Length: 237
Ligand code: PGA
Picture 1: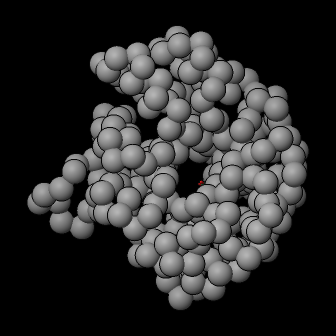
Picture 2 (picture 1 turned 30 degrees about the vertical axis):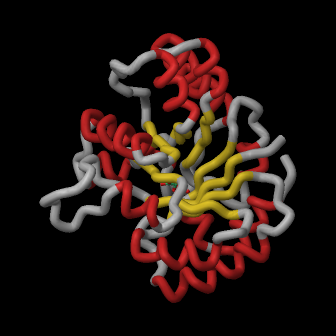
């Protein structure tokens, strides 16, 4: 089964280091069947465009501003990353929610801004799904949902070496699908892409990725080693 393999660099690597990483990954990813996405820091996105375009690897940002443009010093807009060729953006990572106090309201606005700019959203959720009800028409919402990937990342599992069990993951995935089903439609609940994140690495990826309730994985620490990331991304599941 084709899976979605996401790498979240967080605040790691320099642009020069990333350039080497991107060139290596582009080569290693040749012929891979899975969908592969890397999300390096903003400063690396133009290099991602340069070295990943035309390869099997898509790229995205780790965050965007909820605003379109204006007096928001230090912020980066959806349009800016889109212009650099980003197709994805991670929204609501627990680092953003916890360290930068992003509320569900802000996250909701960021999702809308990202989708309005044609980006696909990787929405990270922790213990529960709290998306505000959209006031858009059903079709529009369905379309939006199609562009959203939900990453279930138990906060206690991120960067700790501890992962949720497949039983726990399947249970939570089912809860998330039910919630989407209730809020939108049965089809949306069934079709939404859900990945798991939190200490996925060489030791445990196989067990987690082959969980049939999941569409893929999001890796933080493990994606930084290009050999590890490419190995996991290349495999047929
Ligand atoms: P980890 O990070 O794989 O290092 O646990 C996952 C994440 O925070 O996205």
